[in-house]
Length: 205
Image (cartoon, rainbow, N blue to C red):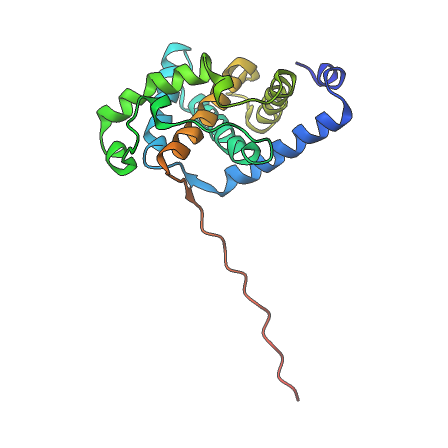
């Protein structure tokens, strides 16, 4: 979807909302150092397997896909409460009622078993976790694609390697990974914020 098509599709308020959500998701992404002990290795497996299927295994492409996935994860953070998005139970990921995130994160076989449920939710059951109107989500994906292409495309990474269908797949994966962390009660690792030093108080003369 081009910028002109985006303007035709949405009213001004809708475009403004999408822009604000993308800006908030970008800011949230910048605060995340890594995902949880479960979704970090799972996200890596999803990106690597997708890259192998889609001939996108070059390091620069994988890095771009990882940034798009993180944007999807952050998007869930931003829209969850304001838009009353549904939450998923552990059973949606074929887990027991009280899953142990630490144990799952340290078990490669457990991580592998989560691949298909995450892929299935992201592709076939996305509306079970994301209930924004179709035109809003479609336009959000278009905005994300434009912004990521502007940010990441270089002489060696073309816009075709970061085309819309790839960006949407990574946004969906990231969004569902955040749903999984919610079901597990797991959180990402947040970068420490720099401590602002106060100005020294001048002594009275």
